[in-house]
Image (tube, rainbow over all chains, first blue to last red; front, top):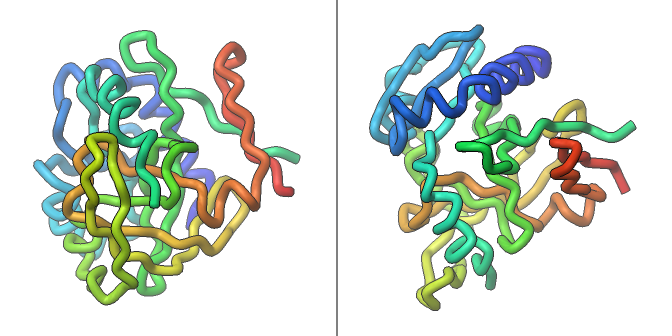
Length: 80
Length: 130
């Protein structure tokens, strides 16, 4: 696991999140070295596109802005 | 030395998404997860497992209650996670019924291992080993 690469990809994501939401909300993207290298409708689709890639890019499900509100209603009660 | 992550900002709203690695079948997969202190377990969309060919249904089946009171099936596996420079083993669930658009980092195996501070004003989340 290349930590520096993971953090670099995360920094890029943090810097571009609003743009990504504008363009890819609801979809799944893979980020590597400051670029989007795969896009799909699910993680399954993206990982199939990335098959064999090494190192593996950072995979992110791009939220809709309203998802954060629904998260408070749903996920905060995800418990046994 | 704490592990520091930046808050992401979505339309100006802070959101605690952080990057982690998850080890499945001897390979590391980098993912972005939402830290959810209300979630008992880390729960990932089943599509992740399907996409990499991991038989997630071989895990221990449990049911988690979601906000509307319904139960969703979750298959738990003990997996290695990477948070910053630290590696921990934690139960990780996969579900094809996770009705939200995020993968979640929950409490089990994580919150007892780290003291986690949400410092919104400073724009950071810190993880310090207990």
